[in-house]
Length: 421
Image 1 (cartoon, rainbow, N blue to C red):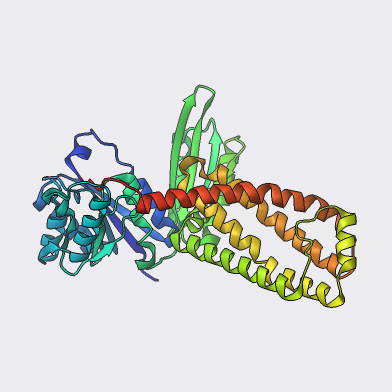
Image 2: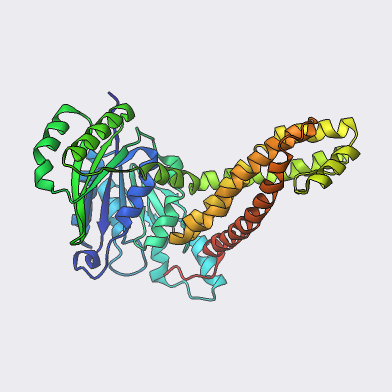
């Protein structure tokens, strides 16, 4: 059996231990790693003391595939993580010339003094590779299997975009959830223990909730890498809840989280964006080469018939092949790009702002299918194009605007006048 790919997180900072700062980096990192099949097995919080950091990092990097540290790489006197990582690996630390040059130029652009304190952020352990920081400039770094990130959550999120391509992938841990209102955890304990013993490799947990007197119950969650086994366990959980005289509620949000992780991956956004651009150029070349008056944006049946009737046989054939070869891939490219931009740059509003793009994809695909029939001489489904084309245009335009705003946000984060301090 293949060993699982695992990770540990080391949160560094006295402010976390004192309770002054709330940790949200653990959730961000764990959710980032889940689509790669990497399981977070341990989280530690350590103080701003070199020996504590060294001890924690050495213990974790010897035990887990990857370690992620956050905090302690800024310009202040207590930002000692870079020195501690160098000590943990037994290497020297010094100013990285490329980082020093980049920071000097950045501060010059902001008309801000590049002080010795800020210059400390250019100190990198020898042999480490840089991790891009699209938010504030000062990079993180990778030393062996340890990724050293900033502590500010938005910067952590930005830095993770430069890490995915460095990771091994493991078997993705899936989950299923079966909930039951009015269930009592104690009444399920024995049955859950027996079920857990019977299905090796599947983790089963019970999580009670209590919102009000009339809204309480237990959520039963099973996790594992074997989908077939997980499906069996789900059925057993449904039977268990039903046996208590309760109607089971099955939740499956894991697939949606995985899809979101895929669409917001920097490589996917760049790839779909380039595909969108390339296909747009190909359309222009194809249309010009055959002098086409295309029907893609026409919804009126009579106007469609008129345009098609005016085409030569060669033009109809060229339009048919353009629809098949280019137009079927076009909505997948622009839809994925638009949705990815909305999900990546608009926080909690992202899923709602991604809806126009996600609606536009099937509308365009259906329209293309009808279009092939029409160009082949079959008008049986021309009525369907009359509804799909307006829907496509009505969703494409806002989706494109949202993506453009997202590009602006990305450009501002990358090149904006922000203080790295």
